Image (cartoon, rainbow, N blue to C red; front, side, top):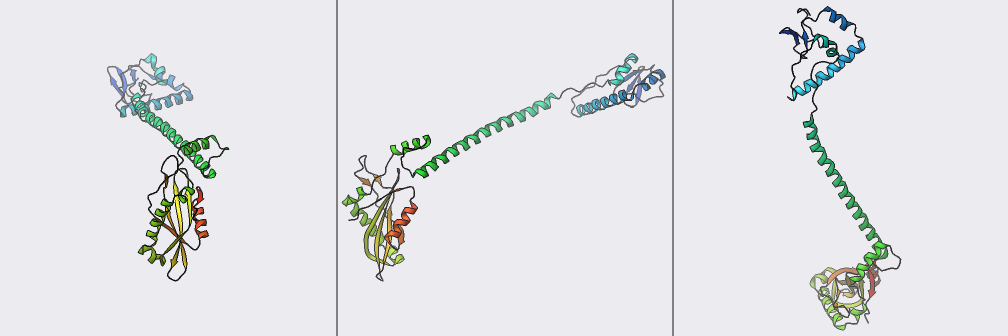
Length: 296
């Protein structure tokens, strides 16, 4: 090769003469100083496809080399190309192949693996929550349909719930209250105390003339609410029906002969008649069983 031709046939980079060898300052290829016109003619005879393939391969290798140099992960070894090896070097440049960037792949793995595991755990938690929600909804639906009553034709889920309710059955009948004279006296005393209060009389225009005309007990397995309807005389001679209630009545013992009540009276509402009061109470206690007090 004449020194006047300073262009690298591999990448068209600048060639420098060093110790009898031409070295490319860009791609690092080295050539013997006796590379002449015959070698150039041999290169020209190569097919267009070979040149294109070699060019594409060189560009790919150069791009990867630049990327490795950017991250200081590549060290280019010095190579010496002999004239007899030129054809092989021309089709496969002497630039060293890039090493696999294992460090970056490991960093990505450290990020991706916890995300995948966390996503899987989250899906399992969501699945458990949905399954429990559906089961609870089915149980509530069965309970609403059956009204808290034990039936012989139920599903397995309903039977389990019913057995638990039956085990803790605190319901009782209103006849136990009606037959307990002492309890009825205490209920009337507590009711008249709130009905004769200044606040109630000024609000509804009633007097101290109040008479118990009806009583209803609404029960479930867990609670018992008592409603007493009083006919209260007004100052103008008309009557209003005021409902007083007591909540959370419980059996005093296992026999159910005694009833616990704290005798704390609450005003429920005012009605035009006993029938209106009864209809409204039944409507508001659709899942309760109702028993009527014997007023006498």
